[in-house]
Amino acid sequence: VRPTSGAIPASSELVARLFAQVLAGKSKLPADIEKQAIADKEAEDRMFYNSLSVRTVVNPTDYMDKVARLIGCYVHPS
Image (cartoon, rainbow, N blue to C red; front, side):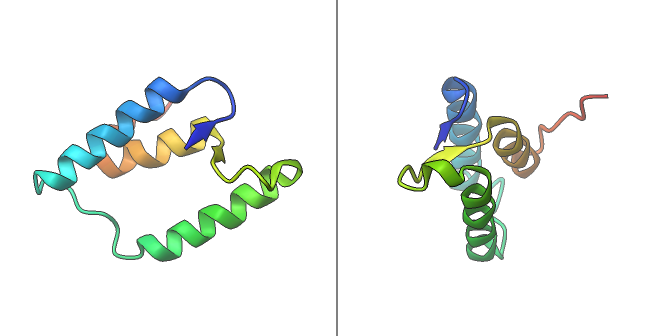
C-alpha cells in the first residue's frame, strides 16, 4: 500500500502490528475480508480515478484508521 501523502512508515507499522497479532492468535482478519477488499478497491478507484494504472495508492487517514480499528488501537480524533 502506498499512501498518497508520505505516511508509509506509519501505515507499515500498523500493518506489521496487525500481522503480528494475527500470527500470535490475538486478532483475526474479518470474516468478510474478501468482500471488504472488493469494496476498498472500488472506493479507491473512485477516489483515484486519474491513477487507475497505479493499484497501490490509498488515502492514508482512512487506511490507517481502518487498520487501527482491526488491532484495537483506534483513537477518535475528538
